[in-house]
Amino acid sequence: MTDPIRLTSLAHGGGCGCKLAPAVLREILAAMPAAAAFPNLMVGTETSDDAAVWRLNDSQALVATTDFFMPVVDDPFDFGRIAATNALSDVYAMGATPILALAIVGMPVAQLSADVIGRILAGGATVCAAAGVPVAGGHSIDSVEPIYGLVALGLVHPDKVLTNRGGRAGDVLILTKALGVGVLSAAFKQERLDAAGYAALIASTTQLNVLGADLPGVAGVHAVTDVTGFGLLGHALEMARGAGLTVEIEAMAPALLDGVEALARDGVRTGASGRNWASYGGAVREPAGLPDWRRDLLTDPQTSGGLLIAVGADQAQAVLDLAVARSFDFSRVVGRLVEGPAEIRLV
Image 1 (tube, rainbow, N blue to C red):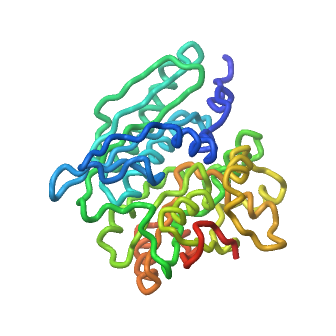
Image 2: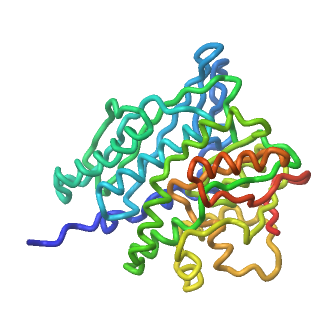
Image 3: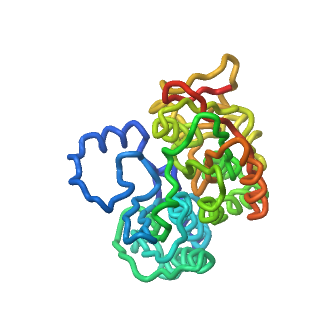
């Protein structure tokens, strides 16, 4: 009996590390013709937000997003779970509750059995069931690399939509998950990840960001985004540009997943981490003496990463308490928004 094919061996990248580099994406979007004005389109492409938002009526807005990628792990069921969790995160990041999902499936059918592909879809369906939504359809193609993800739809009150651009000077920034998913996934592909590291990778990437749906009801929450392929610094920079403020990030403040520091110090990193820094490093002011491995973790692509929340300082503890009650035990204050140019300042 031959050994099963490693899913990751069929893909040139994995997870949110597959995303286009931020600078490339900005160039592509800048070349797009201006869209016609639609009065019910509350959030479109102009702010690099996590999802589009369309006002349905005075009490409901539809949140729509899509997300898909190549395998970050070899287990089909885990791959499906991770991809579905990551896709639903964009709905939660807008303060919405998911209502419906559609599957996006591209598989090399000559290399993967129907059983393997079915387990990928089953993993995604299990996550959607946990989120209380059906996978109500989708589309599949025969592709060179395995690809799986979702179109995800959600609902939120139009007055309670959370975007990445509402931060105010004086807000503190809370990150709800530990960093290091990219490092762990790179170590996995290099066959250097132990059982504890794999468990930490799966636990983080399959934890639904359900906290996001609670945040519109918390006083003082002004902006939210999820930290995914562009790393903490890239998504914080989008928040800075949206608010027209400087984001200060405490370089040593974010929690790290188990085993990540040792791997990072040993030079394990993803290619996407370097591409991220090349894309936006010019907008980051870093202190002298910051170790390269630590900076790599701040640009590390986070597949299904945590929420980055801008909240008034007097309400920060309430958000942290709510996060811990929702089992986001790695939640930390990692920075703040201050007056200044739209850039990142590492402190």
